[in-house]
Amino acid sequence: MEAAILAPAVVLLVLFVTLVGRIQSAQGVVDAAARAGARAATISVRQDPETAKQQAEDAMNAVLKDGGVSCAPLTVGDPTFRLDGPDGLQTVEVTIGCDVPVGDLLLLNGGWGHKHLASGFVSVVDRYREQPGRAAP
Image 1 (cartoon, helix red, strand yellow):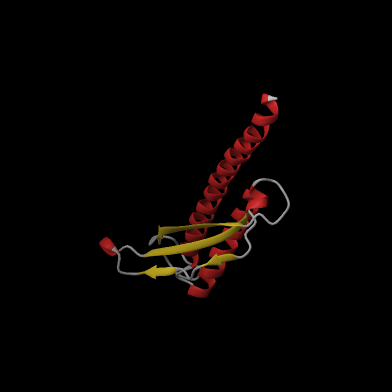
Image 2 (image 1 turned 90 degrees about the horizontal axis):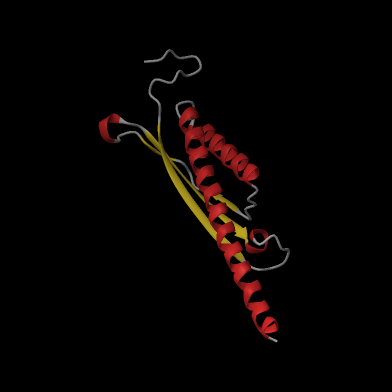
């Protein structure tokens, strides 16, 4: 009798704990994607801003794929280039938004809704990195 009453509550508790853990794990992957995107953009920003954006998107998609996070849709903000940072530092800021199906987080199929995960990262442009066709300063 008591097991019949407690079993559903225990199952719901386990599902809730699993969901919270999977959300944290997916957020970590989204954070890693933002870091990778910012770093990729800083490497190619001196060539062309459009190339930098494409490199950032490619790096973010690769990290999300490796982390097993499926975004529907993936929202990548335009990289923000700041050329007048403190001490003359040039920076690139990248933002990412991702709607993860909750059913995927619980390893279940079905329409359980979506959880929006967002992250951003700022990376400093390496002023001493060599550019193709140019000598280092």
